[in-house]
Length: 288
Image 1 (cartoon, rainbow, N blue to C red):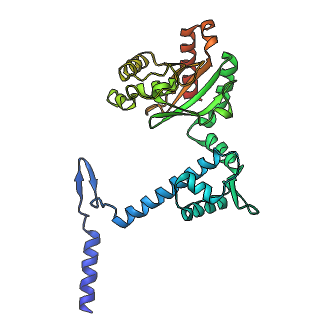
Image 2 (image 1 turned 45 degrees about the vertical axis):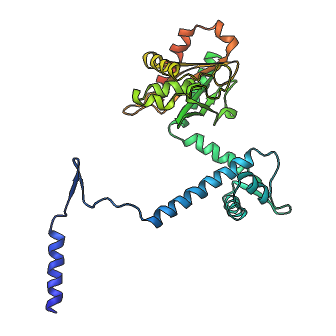
Image 3 (image 1 turned 30 degrees about the vertical axis):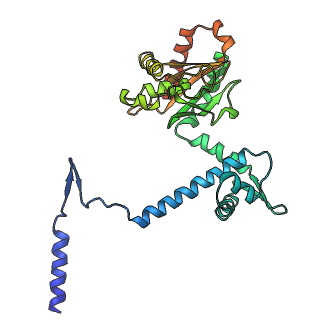
C-alpha cells in the first residue's frame, strides 16, 4: 500500500511538472518529431499505388469507345489481373464504373459526370465565377477561361463562350505554352521560374510552341511587368489568348483568367483593350 501511494505521489508530481520542451527556431516542440516506421511507410506507399492504379483504370476506360474485360484493362495498364479485379470491384461499388453482368465487361458510369459537376462547383472559389464568365464572354464576344496551375501544366476549371463551357473543363497545356501558365508563374518568386522553362529543343504542340528557355524567361519578365501574358497559337493552331492572375488577398494567385479567340479576330481587336479587359475581369473575379 505504501508503494502504491508513492507511485500516486510521483504521478501527481509528473502532472504538475511543466513538460520538457525542445526549441526548433522559435517554435516550441513538446515532443521530438517522430519518423514514420518502415511498416507505416510501406502501408502509405501501397495505398498511393492503389489510388494511382484506380485513376489509371478510370483514364483507360475513358479513352475506350467500348467496354473492356478485366484482362484487357490489365494488359493496357501492364498491371496484374488480381489487382485490376480489386480496383474495378471497388470502382463499381462507388458507382464510378458500370459492370455488365452478362458480358463481365466494364465501362465508365454516368456517375462520373456527377462527380465532375461537384468538383467544378466546389473546387476552390470557382463556384462563384460562372455568372461573371458568362457576362464577360457575351460582352466581349469571346470565350473566357479560368485555369489553375499544377506541376508544369495549367488546367481549365471554368469556362464560358463559344470555345468554352463544359467540353473545355480539364483541358491542359504546359506552362510555357499557356497564357494562364505564364502569368501565374510570373507571379511567383523569380528563383522558381527556371523550373517551369521548356527543355531546349523539346517537343512542340504546334510550330509556334516555344522551346527556348531564354525566351520563356523573357516572356515571364514581360508578364511580371504588364500583369498579363499572351499565347499566340502556342498550344493550339488558330487560337490566341491573353491572361491575367486573379488576385487573392494574402496569398499567391492560384487562378488566372484568359480571353480566348480565333486568331482571325485578332487584327479586328484592340490588343491593349483586350489586356485591360482581362485585367478588369481578374479584378472582378477576385471580388466575386
